Length: 107
Image (cartoon, rainbow, N blue to C red):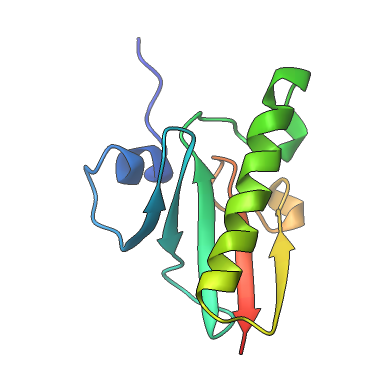
């Protein structure tokens, strides 16, 4: 039996609508539906990793790529300051169990 797709996998597969800001073969960037800052984007890997707790050594280049994309998005959007955030596990505030990096930015 196939595993149920996460909400983010459905967005990546364009089965659900989202505002895309960036796409490549490793990740996508979408607007957060419930923003906590003037700029609140989600950098989501195409590979369905449940959380940062589940990354393996082979995933480290992907994590580095996500951080690089976040930096580029902050620059493109004119952020004077920003923070990057991974929520890990339910007690860590994670709601969707598909790894994603929050970019919260201010001009």
